[in-house]
Length: 421
Image 1 (cartoon, rainbow, N blue to C red):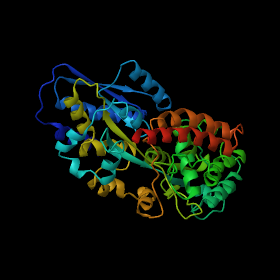
Image 2 (image 1 turned 45 degrees about the vertical axis):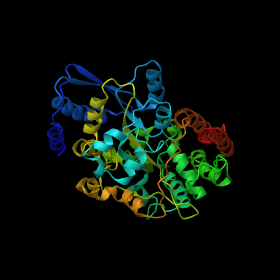
Image 3 (image 1 turned 135 degrees about the vertical axis):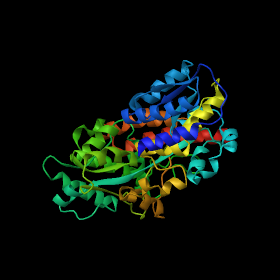
Image 4 (image 1 turned 180 degrees about the vertical axis):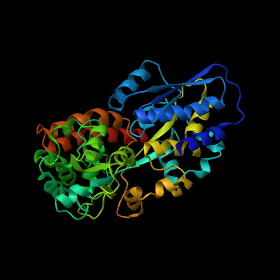
């Protein structure tokens, strides 16, 4: 099926283009894995075949160090033509004039009308201007191991935070097993933000004067959940350093029974586990009867310094064409950007039910981080990583963690508001 998609992508790209003799485009991938890179290379190959004389040079950065490595490249003037732009970085680069406005290209693109509303909304998140074209969305839901739940005497996945903690406690009583796969290493901030907002019952990050809400008692209570799970031994001790690969491995190996993750985790889980041994449910709700699973996305963006902008757009259009995009998303697990793709048999599979149940539930509010802040990328990649690990290890109390976050983010938001006056 995948080969057919690639062949279809090749056919769709066979359009009349000017000849770019010996032209090299630089493409940087930052959310990297061997399978994603291989898929990207195959789709890019179809673009090169359809454009004789064009070579696409792919640079793949390891996600754990991608923010620092990419910033170093940019500061040295080594900018790509096209970059895989994470949601948390886009404000930093767009607001500093480094990304090309894609609106003129979208206005003429045949497929703009076929994009779903969320794609255009998030693509225009910064200054209502498309500084990137999203390729897919990542919404959190709860994977759970049905065999371990049964062994612990639990009939259903947790529907509330209290049930989540209680389930983790019961499963951790089984020798060698843990309740939850905690992502304490790089990329772990989403879980903390999701739990804080769910405990608070709203997704308001700032008060009207720009003061962060994160030091509020309800947020502190939510942040305390992960600290208590770690302290009580309901998560593996070494999970303080776990990233994406470790938490997914911890789940499919049966080490821990619950994992909150995006659909991209399905790739490995479905490959390693019997479909009868696990399922995916909506995220647990808080005291207000609501949950706030994080909604993330990544885009293809063009650097303003590109000397081949029209050709760089052709590459973005190829990557995000219906054929190229569905081939990519079927390998990355991202939710679709096209209206029609939502009806694709791939997404009709019952394993996606947990995510689509969330999207249909009015009491489930996808949580979008304050990506408008230029400081958010550093906060996510550095400050949050250091302080959450300190909290897990007992070096920071949850209220101290929350106060440090609130102080940093208040300064950032108030500076942002001042610029808008």
